[in-house]
Length: 331
Image (cartoon, rainbow, N blue to C red; front, side, top):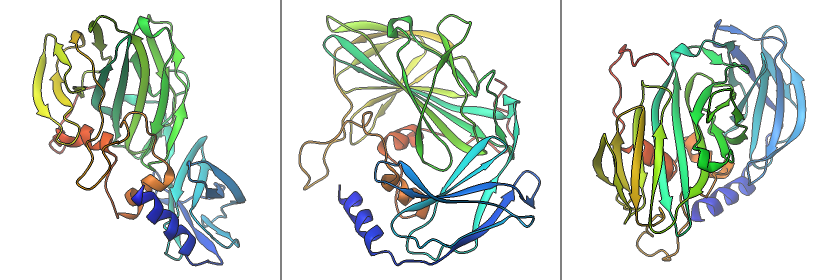
């Protein structure tokens, strides 16, 4: 809350600027992009936005808005059926802003799965399961394939087809996504465009859990990434290919590596993953899986003044960078 209050104060005290201008560059071709639709958007605390004005770039790729800026604003640029978002850094003159767009491709071979992370939080009668897929698009084209989707995943039959999905691209603005059932048993897909850089899909669903024990089958459809399982403190996990990697310091969540395309986990106990309060803070703290980041929470990422959310820190805690040029496999 201290961070949020500070950012709100910063937004109020930010000076008014009389013009916003910049250039849209097609990073695939390396040339200024004409005909791109650019919207100036005022952002609310919950991350939603209201459009202040729209323009289309000229032959030189340039755009300009006459509006005075007050508070937190962003540029939303639509090109080739993909919407790119970029927050305008507060306290800095919004002039000569550089906006990137890309050509699209339906070839998913170059978009690698870096990590698949499964969070398990069993309760008295049900278990909350959250899954995160970290993708890395190392090309200069945006993956866009409405037919085959950008990611396919397995949803346990016990979830009864009910799953909440969100997508966070390189712009760090979370947005809700839609999972659609495929013709394959228990397989769903999402079709959000995946720009160059690192992106993440987050899933959340509930399965039955009673009597202090249960099972969960973890299946992955892609083999090139690493699979991690994060369990609440006090929860016991057993399964083939499951190797303990230690505990996350603040939450004491247990972290495991997992090998195998389909592994059944035997789960005992109950608990939730919560962040322990820092010294001097109140004992009550939020569940890390239930709080969705707002645009204000993400501003430090954009301006370079802060760190990642706890969930993303968990993802990267045991992550090892791949050697340059090393093939991590095909999807």
